[in-house]
Image 1 (cartoon, each protein chain N blue to C red):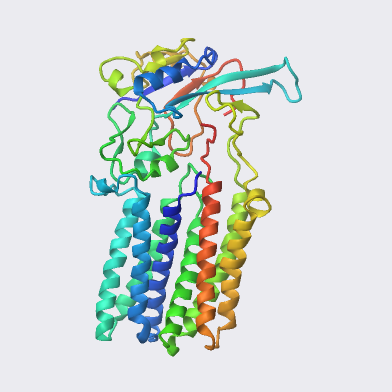
Image 2 (cartoon, one colour):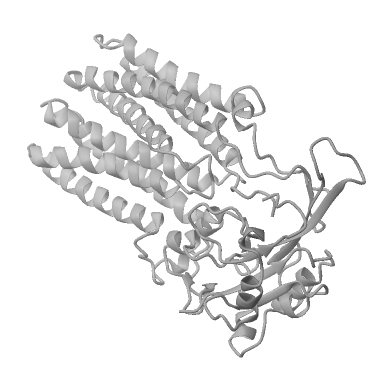
Length: 290
Length: 194
């Protein structure tokens, strides 16, 4: 199907916002990074705002957003609920961080809500009608992206705010997240290689006589060695491996954190964009002939 | 609750496209879009390795299947897409926000965004006609008399009667990914290709 840029940006931003906020919760639980609490919450809210604007741009009739909105089985409704919950908790976090004391329960809530938000977003796209999307590996991909992207964001903020006590943990989170991206994408590619759709030997649509016969197999080879190879390997190497290597290089060191963390974040974002684009291109419906 | 559906006897379909054309006319379907398409399936060798003239083909009409468990209804955030009491799936255009998640969730690709109205559309089973006791235009205009409309839960309906008279092994549906398509296809002489 066609690339849906607003949704690509939205899901990426949700992963980054939730990952940043959950990572901040972990730092708080470990008693580190008090200096970066406020900028980290602001960064998380900024990601949410960009994602929210992008998702509104996707709607053809955003003016009707409250016209019956709230059908609970809808992934969009669940995402909106998740965003509101995350936003409220983030605001409470922001207020309490100004007082200098974040209760442990709030930090735990940040981690739980961050993870839940990512899973809810992934769940919205898990549609049986689109077999390439209909796998829990989509959740794994989104989670790994949240861990790597959230870690890199916190790492960069820690470096910029000179929160020295909070440099190593985000670097390690980035390293682990990057590794998970690599493993998750490899598993996803294996799954995509196994997808085959119902097919006719030959068919013809009289209303669209020059249209190509729909692809119903070979998605794996298209992803690994075909027209989408640069998307997949780019996401795996740049968005996963390089971020992981940079994180591991700074596992127990704190020098040059600004360039390392900034490059990691750019890599995770770039990888997230291109693999999402590949998923849209491969995300044909189970009956692809109409 | 009723279960309005169309049963198509593919052995009778001649591929005249009258159903597609009639549908576009009566429902003012935009240029380039269709609520009902007729695909030619084949020609396919009757047996493996066979050559012409030992080939077969049939025509397959594809449209919204007015599923029993429509995914499009499940994913709609505003309730614009809903399952009606007569079993059809309808879109309340005034409530549609154009998110197109229903388009993504449809296994048959039969929904599209109306670029002028900025809302999603698809086959309504000619609700304006069936509400007054009529039949969908694609059924009444069928040149081969291949289509039967009615309530599948009502044994006296045309659609239920033709199904009852047909060998169940010759009755098919489009691929089901949990959505339970309501429409049925009859193909007696040839191999169903999916």
